[in-house]
Amino acid sequence: MGKLIVAFDVDGNLVRSVDAYQEVFSEVAGNYGVPKERHYGHLIRTTGDPIEKQFGAVMDLPCEHPQVLEAVAGWRRMAYSPDKIAPLYGDVLPCFEALKTAGYRLCATSSMKQDHLERTARAHGFGQWLSFWLGTDDRLIDKSHHKPMIIGRFGITPAEFEGCSYLSGDGKVDMRIAKRWGSRGVFTVRRGYEGKSSEEVLGLLGEEGYEAFAVVKSLTELPDVIFSDS
Image (cartoon, one colour):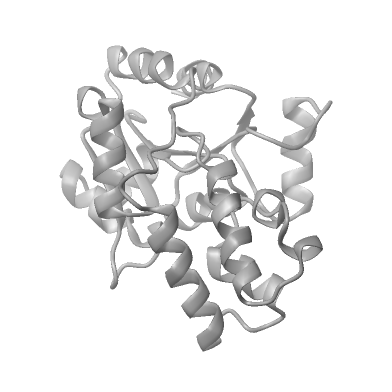
């Protein structure tokens, strides 16, 4: 079986959500007395980290502390409100079209709340390209648990999934999830690493413990990376 499945992280990878999320992060952190010099830009600098870790860092509290969890809940309510639909990056649809035309099966995996992901998918016409999109709810709090759901939806075995799948994401945590899933993680450089080549970013990620299969500067590069590996 060929490598025919590509799962896409959504926030920051398909849609320009990070700046809006930072604004909400700063507002919520400020409400808990966190000084501006600590929260301003923190979410952007730590893109890809769990939101609990990001709030814990600026609040000087463990991720599981009740105040941190309360702040996270407030952030989710504000960031995922119905009136906040982030715009799509311009390189997404050409990437989808190239992979779909070549016979790849596409889906989205996100830590975004499922209802907000549904709104985002409808707004950007994901249904034309993606077989399905998986978000989170009160029980399933992050996308790292989506592997068995993806396997079930595509009707394949775990062994087949591990031999035929890629995970595209802009966060370091996405590369860690890909490794856990047995998928090939392809890191999209959306911000940071100025002046660095894809090869240099790949090396830096490895040094930080986030092993990636490849690095792309634009999703328009992703199909060629995958085709050359198939």
